[in-house]
Image (cartoon, rainbow, N blue to C red; front, side):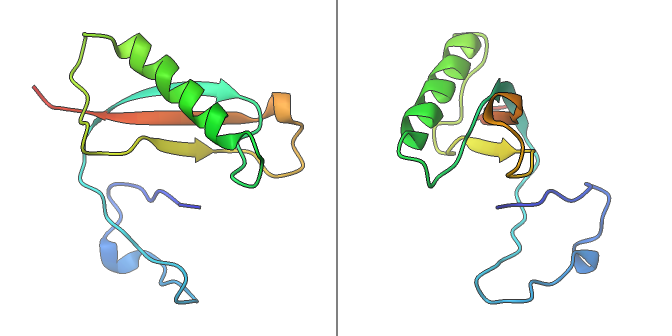
Length: 101
């Protein structure tokens, strides 16, 4: 799980983790292609890898040759809804970092 802080928030104001299993990371700014998809995206489900790969493939197909993908960076997934939200109503996103040209 990750939280995204506003870009104007100073790093020293980001709350400190209450346990050693959490960490604060800073990612460099970049340009991303983003695609929204609905449905369950849960790492505990047996088909999560299939769902993940299908959505990565769909976004890569949409990007096509319009942009160059930063192949050194793994796609990022965002999940927005609480666990009680029915699967079909859940909103998720996959983000692929693009190379700046």
